Length: 164
Image (cartoon, rainbow, N blue to C red; front, side, top):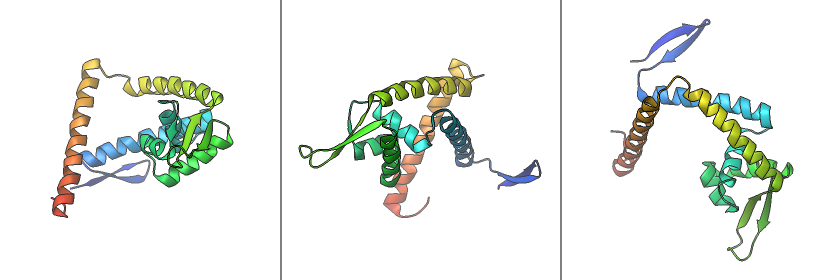
């Protein structure tokens, strides 16, 4: 059963379940990243994710970039519109690839991508602070198992049409 606790006069719901805790940590990390990347680079999280996805390969189809950035089509479209307005990406409609739109980082986009990677490395170091290498290895292994269990739960729900 969930319990409540007060922090600064605000009642907070605490649940000892894995989902609740992982989601809480993920939300804090996302809020922190959102503030940092917006203030430091003028990018929201969708634009940041798109920049990272586009930095992995010289060019991507828009749909592949969206999937790589884990964005839905509308989020990807808005992110690319903003990145194009800032001249960080180019977009080219091609007939040779089934009328696909190809996205590429511009020179300034590649430069920003490199700075984003450096900033991300510094943030990751701070997030990992206080953990030993063995603890991090264990954390990643445990999170991997949680992820596999969540995927198995999704599959079970699809097969049975109900929660277990």
